[in-house]
Structures are given as structure tokens and as C-alpha cells.
Length: 266
Image (cartoon, rainbow, N blue to C red; front, side, top):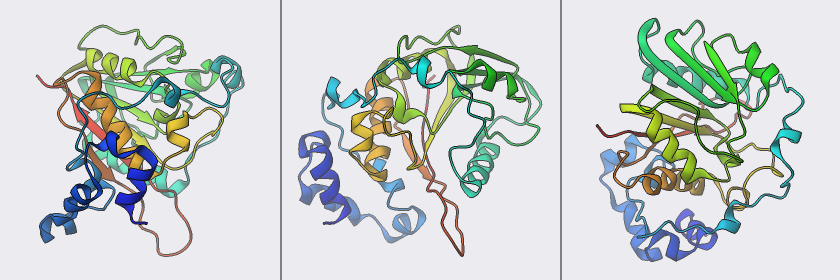
């Protein structure tokens, strides 16, 4: 079964609002466009969004529904992607962030931890972190301030409207059980023209990831995260795009790495 067929089988034809023949037609792009993008990046070129948000409440259930405060009560001073993927993400951030030292710039890292994978020495007027474990957040040297909050209980971001130029989320979007509410909040706290970058790989704590995520693959995940931008604030974000930043290695294994992003319209 090809990638199109797998996505239809996993998500259902109604989710994509298209038949397999229509989806296969997406491959009829020009040779130059095809060579410029990976297959993963092309998922959001023609997403065929249904008229309504296609997912049901049970899609956001998790195997372990005990409070996340229990799960994250002990600090984990570890990284959740391999070194090559970290380097690739850090390089990407360096390409898209406001220049280091920009005092008027404000960055927010949600689901933050002891390390945000920002470029070494990166500084802005404000770098805020929002996460689940205070010991981890306190060790993050790039944050200028932090707050502890469980967004799966209360998805409200504790910040003023139009506060941030950049929002990042690293390998945690798969744990959000109220994604539309959180993406609406991201839109609220972004400055007009500000961008949210949601990065993810194929690793997770499976008992805490939502059912929709654990039942689907990488290309589906790109479509799912893109749908959060599209449906959370209709017309409020630019159409989401994807960057495949998976490291290129000659030998051995590396974690895949993808970023789905959108910008708050002015």
C-alpha cells in the first residue's frame, strides 16, 4: 500500500475529503517542485481540509489518563531525540528566530524543559518557558522566566495578548489533549506576524500520547498538526507548512525530525 493509501486507511477518506485518486493527483506537481520538497513536506501542499474539524473526542484519549502532574513530578534531565536531530533543530531555529540580542523580541517555549535546543548563547528581550516540572525549567539557562502549568487541564496560556514573536514546541504536540484550545491561545499571545513552530519526531511516551498519534505515522502527524492550525482560528493563521529537517547521515540511524509552522495574520 502506498503512502496515500495508508493515510486513507488510517485517517479515513472523510478526514481528507478526497478519494484515493484525487489524493494521488497531488503527485502530479512539477518536477521542480517535487525535487525541492520531500514527500513529508508535500503533505500540506494540498491538504484537502474537510469543512469541519474531523476528529472526535475519543481521538484525544490516552492509555494513561492519570493526572500528568504525577507523570512529570520527577525531573527528567534527558533529551528525547538523538544528537543529530537536536543539531538539526537547533540549526533550524537559528535560521528562523529573530537575531540573537534583539531586545524587542519575545520567544515562548511551551511544554518546555531543562533545555530548549535553541542556538547556544541565544538571547532575546524575553524567553519564556511553560512546562510541567519546576526543577527542569529552573535549569534551563536560556529562559528569562518560566511558569509551571498543565495545559491538558487548563489550556489557557498565562500571558497577555500579542506578546510573542515566536512560539516553539519540541516533541510534545503529541501529548496535547485539547489542541484546538491551545492553538487558539497560541494565536492570541502571538504578535501579528509572529510564528509558531511545532517540531516532532517519531518518539514519544506512548501511554501519554493521544490515541490519534499512536495509531498513525509521520506523514499523518504532519497533516494532524496542520489541521490544528487550520481549524483552531479559521483564517487567523497562514496556511500551515512543513519542513523536513531530518538529518542526513552517511552511516547509522538518526531520528526523523519535522516542523509544522504557521504565522498569525496581521
